[in-house]
Length: 375
Image 1 (tube, rainbow, N blue to C red):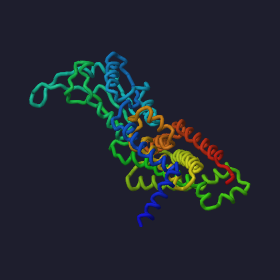
Image 2: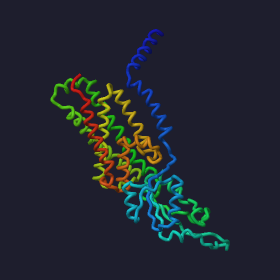
Image 3: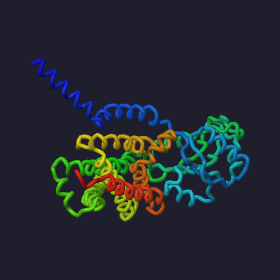
Image 4: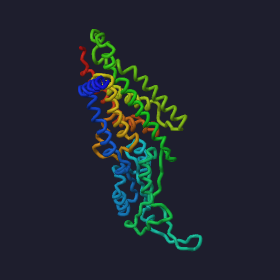
């Protein structure tokens, strides 16, 4: 018995050593998890992209801006002239928050003595400004809310223990701060990534294992036509999944769908095509269906952790953001959250839409080039 058992173990070890793809996954998946969780994942959000409306244009407003920047919580990347411009920028995802400093800022900085109900001296004043923020991302919103009681002692004669907060906070799109509102649209991207890539990653390999490759070789079908034929049936499947997820999220969890269905359809169509094209590329690399599944997991893991689904994109280091920008899920999560939660239009999210379109074209052409009509 021991001799037979040792022979089987030796056979499996030798077979595993010859399967370079599986051996590489054994090494790379733990390293990938370690790097993602240890380096890229960070819940301490810093440098949130923000804008400012400075109606005061005084040394006080500039001092307040510098004080906020010194906290490293936000970076003021844009300046706006009106509330309407700021609201449009938040809707389009250009910034996550906008600071409004009123015209009477110097007067608001002054502390006026008063007396409470027991005739004890107290200090009352008005907030010096207002934060307008995108409340659909609960983590980012919590970071901005932490600036509500920012002490401004160095800016003016203003105590840190005040009856009134330093800034007012107005949250758009999710004032109740329900996390499910942010999760459901992101979950749509994760589910589509998993299913679409899984469907097509084994497409070519399955033909080889079933013995159908010989029939495809003798047909006049060109590689590009074969790649497109593999993609088109699953586009309808993906759109059905979109309808199921958003409908269930709306009726069960009361997640609003504010955007137009035409914009939602176009964004979903572009992402489904990009995911299917990525799956076809994987299918031309893998030699077996097991390898195709391993490569799918290898792509799915960073798509979940780096796309902004679980952890804010702004909290990631620059290197992780570069990797995230290469993933289709990152661009789709921006689009679907903008359309579903903020009523944005596809045209205002044009950069992400063009990226998905370009990714699809490159992926299909690359898969067609790698596919050879011979055994």
